[in-house]
Amino acid sequence: MGSLIFLGLVQAQAKPSEDSIQLKPIQVAPHTYFVQGFPEMGSSANQNFISNAGFVITPKGVVVVDALGSPVLAKKLIQEIARITPQKVVAVIVTHYHADHIYGLQEFKKIGAKIYAQGEGRSYLSSETAKQRLIASRIDFAPWVNASTQLVAADVWIDQKSKFKLGGVEFIISRVGPAHALEDLMVYIPSEKVLFVGDLVFRGRIPFVGNADSKGWLVALDKIEKLKPKIIVPGHGAYSTNPSEDITFTRNYLKYLRESMSKAALNLDPFEEAYQQADWSEYEGMPLFRAANRMNAYNVYLSIQSE
Image (cartoon, rainbow, N blue to C red; front, side, top):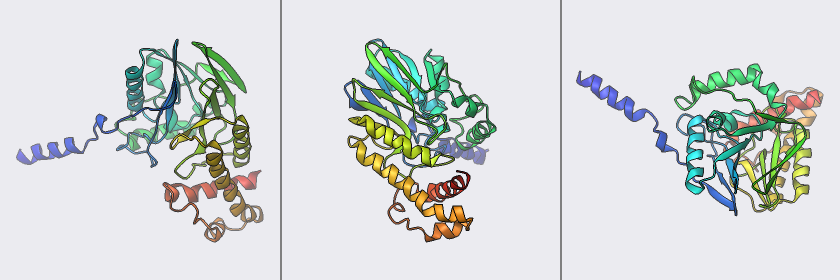
């Protein structure tokens, strides 16, 4: 009996605590805040808190950008917003339908928020990829992502561009994909001079390329730069008060992936040979290099062959 009690205590101590991950909103403009995810892979220990989410407070309600990587994180974000303002969350804009940005959506639906996303997101939601990813996430991120975690569709599907005003504050939502994802959106708030760019710009870690359209991504970065925002809030990493510098980092990384993989891809030479010959010294000390770089290079190698 004593050993059973001891085992139970060990299991109780091993179970991650809901309070072990704290969200700390960072103010980047008079009415704009964001929470910054960890520069690491998603796990049960970090509740899949690896991406950013932001919010803008207006006199008529709060607009949130992205919903974080688990329902528990979304609940915490809602609580943090309530500590700052009595205004209700009335809208959530999804920059793209990747798991670390959307698994919290159901919590915002529960409180009556309207969800906006780009129309190509419907293809992802109905895909086998989305279903299998959620099945895997219920294991990898348990108990925070579990059987009650669902994929949530938008209430408003946006084509190319949309604008709306809330409490006198204008939100300009623009499609910039296919790039990092088919359904990439960016959100500009002119009065705050803040641009939310989702995963089109990365700071402080290796970008995640996945099945991205790297050529389209480079075009998207040019569009972002032309807006000349004062502040950029990326999908991962700290906010930027020098957007040009951080856009350049992401651009240079994508360009180097394409340059280092292009010859081998077009000549059908072995990927491994091309990867070993490339000079990764500029990036190998960055967070997630080992986890993401080889996969990024391989995906670009394959995508160049299909261009």
